[in-house]
Image (cartoon, rainbow, N blue to C red; front, side):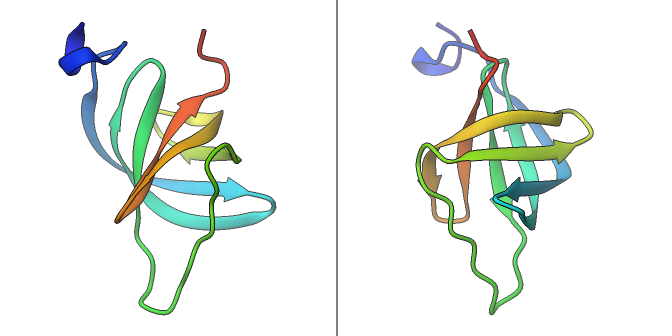
Amino acid sequence: MPGGGRRHERIPVNEPATIVSDGEMADGVVTDVSESGAAIEFTLDKDDTVCLDIGQGVGVKSESLKDRPARIIRHYDSGFAINFDDDT
């Protein structure tokens, strides 16, 4: 399997994104993308916080992702990973 056991190969990117969930918006950066999901890092100011739960639906607006519906599948220190809802 590509990517050490992953279903789809990851493609590194570095593009600005807007994350939208429950009417809230935050700025971030798409750091990699595959057919089934992506990794997003936040670009928050020092006092800003974002609360996103595993399984929560989000929209990620970026050049390559357009506005694909997705769900949070994993958190990490500076961001999170998503799985696209339309992934089969």
